[in-house]
Length: 282
Image 1 (cartoon, rainbow, N blue to C red):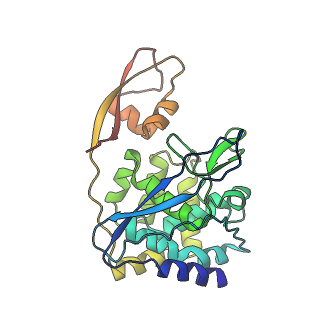
Image 2: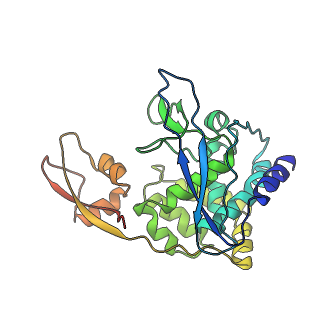
């Protein structure tokens, strides 16, 4: 309860009714081989749709906050309100955000979460300039994003899903369609575990997380995002390319990539031209 009150107090101070959109910029990522300086995120509010659902995160004070929770129930009590705020600002069901956080971070008790406050297992990827740490996952010593407070991890999760072409179709679903979201995340390639949707749905129904979706929908104020525009580009297959590596490079799922190119199998030939979809820069 103390953790929940603390988070609520911090967020309450920075809720805005006239809508500001938070843009986060990061200091240049340090080279761990030459320096131990920690890069800190800096919050830059900019214009957003006028809605009580939009809010700006408090500026990072540069101090790593270590969170310890003792149970899944305590995790939910601690972060449910943040998940609801994110739902208002980005349209991702709070139940999905909470279920993913529970699953990916072991309800905040996993090693990665303890080291990095990264509750969604988001890796560094190209262009990440924030702080980071290394953790064994699919491969040994992979780079994972690091946050000074879990609330920044929740925000980055929202930005991650809402800014990539392969997840765009999810935002056409009803805001409280947690089953559609669960299956859609798997279809879009968020996780390789074929049981991933079932695990999310089981968590949502066991802990009745969908009640948080219904509350947000009932109160209204969910920001309506302007539909993203995408364009098609051509990728010429290079030696060593696989559908997996190409899908990761352009943030499209393998099924979508195969559908765009009328492929019946995953075989590629060097020099082959593939149509890929990417966000259109306006």
